Amino acid sequence: MSTLDHPAIAKVATALTEAGQDAAANGIVILPADVRTAPQAAEALGVEVGAIANSLVFRASFDDAPDAPLLALTSGAHRADTATLAALAGATKVGKAEPAFVKEHTGQTIGGVAPVGHPGRLITLVDTALREYDVVWAAAGHPKSVYPTTFEDLLAVTGGRAADVTGQDVRS
Image 1 (cartoon, helix red, strand yellow):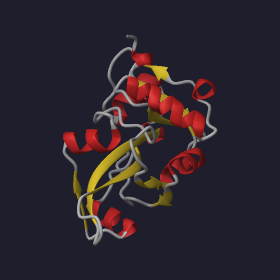
Image 2 (cartoon, rainbow, N blue to C red; image 1 turned 90 degrees about the horizontal axis):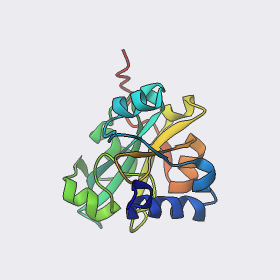
Image 3 (cartoon, rainbow, N blue to C red; image 1 turned 90 degrees about the vertical axis):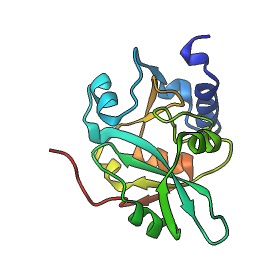
């Protein structure tokens, strides 16, 4: 089975197509090696690290759901602040999610989590810093796969909300 035939990538392609964002037109790119971090992805693609949309899954506690996934799509130039995420999402607490939790709620492994293609819809916050880039690169379900998109398309495809998830710029 080629990487492009990987079940998680196929689910992402299907989700993009169903959302009117044709995966074939968008062009899922299979890279020669895993890119599990924003700097690795930026280097492999020859783009600024800020143009990488990190898909970060957190474990959030809400009054009616004490153990829910929260997806933050952050610019690779930013770090998400869990207190800020909790306030934005209306959660009582937001913390790190273990790999098994991420896999359970996305069907994808850390380093390849896409904005879409999950078993169910996730509460999603999209970093407003991604607006700065005409093209944003997001994971496509596998650590070797990415696809080009836009800030607006990330909002549309995820049903997410635009938010300043950090305020701390870590670019140097």
